[in-house]
Amino acid sequence: MSGRRPALDLPLVARGKVREVYAVDDDRLLLVASDRISAFDVVLPTPIPDKGRVLTALSVWWFGQLAPVLEAHGATHHLVGADDVPAAVAGRAMLVRRLQMLPVECVARGYLSGSGTVEYQRTGAIRDVVLPAGLVEGSRLPEPVFTPSTKAEVGEHDEAITFAQVGDAVGSEQAAALRELTLALYRRAVEIAAAAGIVLADTKFEFGTAADGAGLVLGDEVLTPDSSRFWPAVTWSPGAAQPSYDKQYVRDWLTSSGWDRVSPPPELPADVVAATRERYVTAYEKLTGQPFG
Image (cartoon, rainbow, N blue to C red):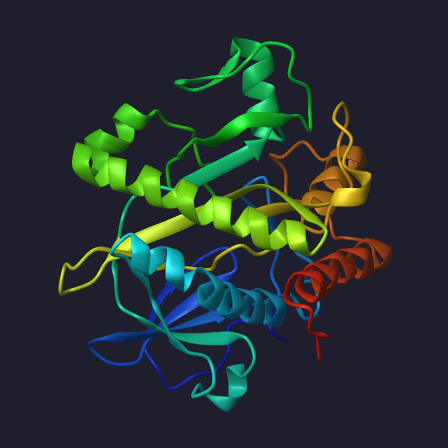
């Protein structure tokens, strides 16, 4: 089962909520996506079949789509390839460059949703980003905003931070570059998603630097249902939670189940598992225009 750690004859470097990272050589890593799913920063006990394959295939596709934007900003991505990988993880593994990852989650928002809505309702802002009055859940923002967060360890919670705190972590010049590139990538992704009939409400990117130190490198996964909110454009209507092609469906079920987010999370029912898989596959097929198989 791909929810478990695969048996690979490679040193394990790290294990995250969803992925394992293995050392290939001094320059490359193997990034393996499992079928595990997390919500509220907790790994749930029930895997989602084919989720790892969707995350990998969609990330590979997006890296190709975004390459021109990265190049225009003197940046690149970490993907080496997804074909020459061990058979045990074929379809859900990427060969990537080793990076020194930056300690920041680079979040771009074009719509108000989730934790952003909660903070806006309390303060009228998301940390240091002041927003117009009168917005509601699902509102489109006047322009995309950069609302970074910490990069928490497994079991810990990401925390929204200010732009000044990003500067404290990586330096003011690097912080400005992260904000500019994050918003440029988001804007291009919004255009691509819109052509597929999807609203890209928000997403997160992770960046690092390579040994040569030449520019930022886009790492981790990119623009998947794990890291983004994808809404059907035809049903978008501000004022309530939106139908989605992402893991918000699981978050909503957990909330309705009465789970307190402290005790061990419950198993997901079979119908929730099936509906979640369908959403992930639909996101892939709509965005890429290709059947999932």
